[in-house]
Length: 248
Ligand SMILES: NC(=O)c1ccc[n+]([C@@H]2O[C@H](COP(=O)([O-])OP(=O)(O)OC[C@H]3O[C@@H](n4cnc5c(N)ncnc54)[C@H](OP(=O)(O)O)[C@@H]3O)[C@@H](O)[C@H]2O)c1
Image (cartoon, rainbow, N blue to C red; front, side, top):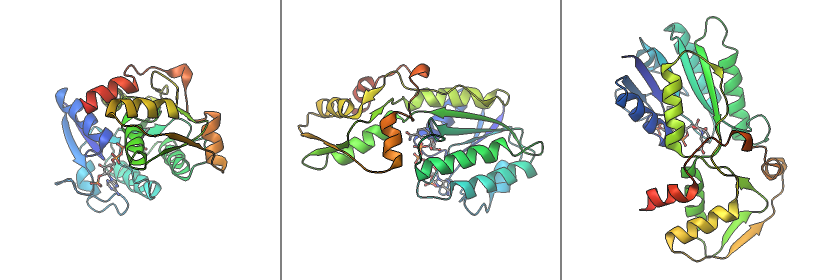
């Protein structure tokens, strides 16, 4: 049995990673701002030393899309170094180096910080995946509160099942540091409008889909498909299968 700290272990991905690791007989410490006894705000790092003390690996799933992930990573890396933690696994996103979106830029910075932590830092593994089915569902559900469904035109996504990502992260966490591993993409690249129709069908709603052309370089990157990895379409669960499971 190994002892593994999962940051963001109460979140969508982190909770599944924690479950997987426990099922395999590992001791799991869950860290988030609200998860006792490891209630730590990574942006200030207070209490982090106790959380990392004696762990064999850290799976870093915590994130705050509104900002501060780079500061959080600096605290985590420093604590990991002080405690000589041998392995840090980080979950990133396909295209963080190609789509000029603020959140992606911060994730690329965090990747670099982990990669460049050097000899005194933990060994590392970085996995990039495409968008989770959960995220697409959340975005569509929020948009469908309107009488029409406005969607960025010309954008496709390749959503993946969060449980499949959790399986892979758990596997990586109990293995040796592997560096940047192969990207993981969902089974299908689908136009957003196509996924929206699947969502409307599964929830018995009717809404006209209104394509909206947006400005900006990030949108251009998404239109180009810089966040996709069709050659690594390794996920199995389709968006429709996910919806059937989730919405019963
Ligand atoms: N969603 C996607 O489509 C997708 C795709 C590829 C990669 N990823 C990556 O996967 C990771 C997990 O995403 P997710 O969707 O599972 O996130 P999530 O559900 O929003 O969970 C975020 C977690 O981070 C914790 N957290 C937030 N701020 C914190 C702070 N300052 N200190 C400590 N803990 C903090 C939250 O708990 P508290 O609120 O209790 O602090 C929560 O447990 C992220 O790195 C994300 O970039 C996501």
